[in-house]
Length: 159
Image (cartoon, rainbow, N blue to C red; front, side):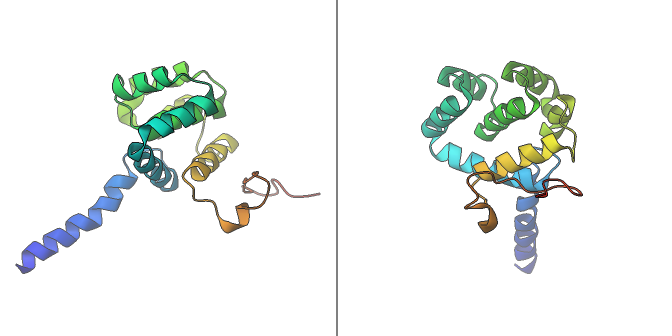
């Protein structure tokens, strides 16, 4: 019985690691936020689809295509649209890279599209995902939706 409980505890300890690495963005924070987005989107996919359609000017049928034909998780659809926005490339370009690099993870896909780890684009993407997941810090809540944090030496300082 003791061994059984030990196995259960070990298994439960691996669940957060498995969940965090599902999207393989290269960032534990982004992976966690995408997991939260996925949970919420799966609870009401219709609402999620409508929100994405309006926010990114994409038809709901395209979103359905990504979901049913390409077997993309809702958070992956969202992330593809965000990557498209941040790297200023059509979502079709992102989807083409996704199709060929799917097994390598979203970190590789973003890198292939020009979003390098640690770059301004990477930080913008991370911030947008964080905001979508609803994890805004108390400090960011009242600054008129800017929500950007300073990254690196001297960036974003008031003069």
